[in-house]
Amino acid sequence: MRIMISADMEGATGVTWTADVETNSPQWERFRPMFTGDVNACVAGLFAGGATDVLVNEAHSAQRNILLERLDPRARLLTGRHKPLSMMQGIDSGVDGVVFLGYHAAAGLDGVLSHTYLPNQITGVWLDGTRASEGRLNAALAAEYGVPVLLVTGDDLTCADAAGYAPSASAVAVKQCVSRYAAICKPPSVTATEIEEAAREAMALAGATTAPAPAAHRIEIEFDAAHLAAAAAVVPTVEQVDVRRVGFDAASMTAAMKAFKVVTAIASGAVEGSYG
Image 1 (cartoon, helix red, strand yellow):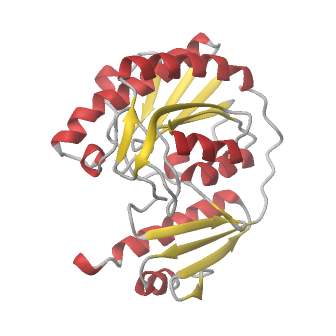
Image 2: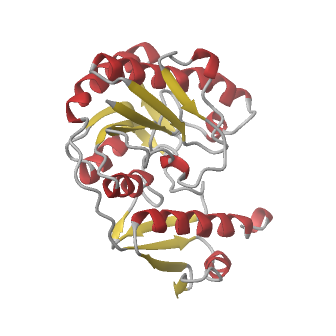
């Protein structure tokens, strides 16, 4: 059984603040071991449940956050940028299940450090008319390859979101959202136990794949400023559907996510100083 972990950082144990996840800050250095600890707990549980190979794909920011020297030696780490499928690189390699570890709620909704891809310029993303978190987008991509989502970890609102796109998956809430920058957090010793046990049990879903079924999808993105939508609309196939909103259609979820990556990169590059 080959399993992939897509490991984001905003939903890791103890994380509540921007500096906790921003590269090279003292707080980031403090939380890297806790993030790595969450990953190791998951790896341990997956192997206890029958996994024979675990690939950990770093999914946060520069994607160089997990401490390789502290990683469970049974796992392999895909670290660094730039990857065609970004957070989901490896989903097309024949894995039997995927874990969304350290995930968070969608842009425009409550949740600890809630956002969708860009930290604050995006106010909402919709997949086929449904507001989408990174988890929902990534689950749709996993489904295209017939890969089940086994487990989701993050705050309580992330877990509630996961029930909508992966109802069979296990979920571990490592913290309870109070605001975007505050949460009631469980200690790492507690979350490690909970993650490990949930991962072990979640292996019961591994291999319950369906036939890959690429299908057409539509993604719409709403920005917090008109010029970001205008910048994104220069991409071929992307249309500006409202003053701050763009949309595009794609023949498959793989194509949709690659286009989404381009749109967010262009919008991010169009942000200007304090005025955004």
